Length: 166
Image (cartoon, rainbow, N blue to C red; front, side):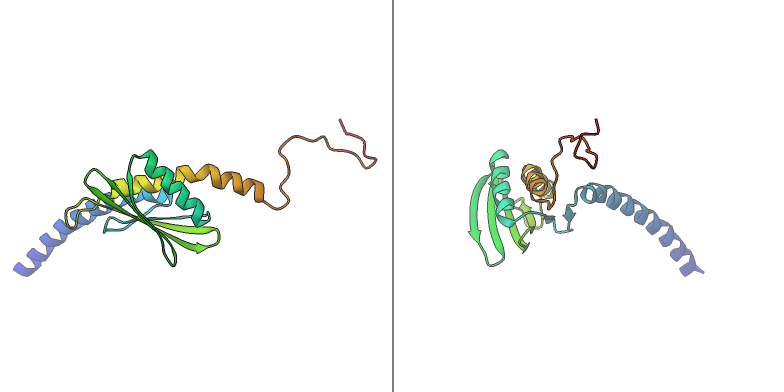
């Protein structure tokens, strides 16, 4: 009888924790899901961009400069680029991986200098600011490279004789 009572109390207590945990997870996921940013429990932040790796790299460099983060590493790797930056007792590692000719993945980890403590807010901001920097470049390229793209100026339709219908 005591074991059933203990199990009942445990279920009540744990169900409350689970509900709170789901609420917290849902609140955090809303931001990441809306922006296409993926967070891991280790504090690493991921995002895939529809842009060539060189454009993503240049946007990352502009972002770090705008955020006043000192570049500490910028090396070509077999799959892309490995970059590092420093800011206020934080060590930031950025990996850019080329998935296809026009698709690149960014992975950012901001280490606070204390074992097991990562600054996912800073990592997320780097990813989001890079996306913002990259947006005008990719929008412009996408609009100009669409096959059969037509000008947006209004053109009066013509009848079969070539005369304007206006």
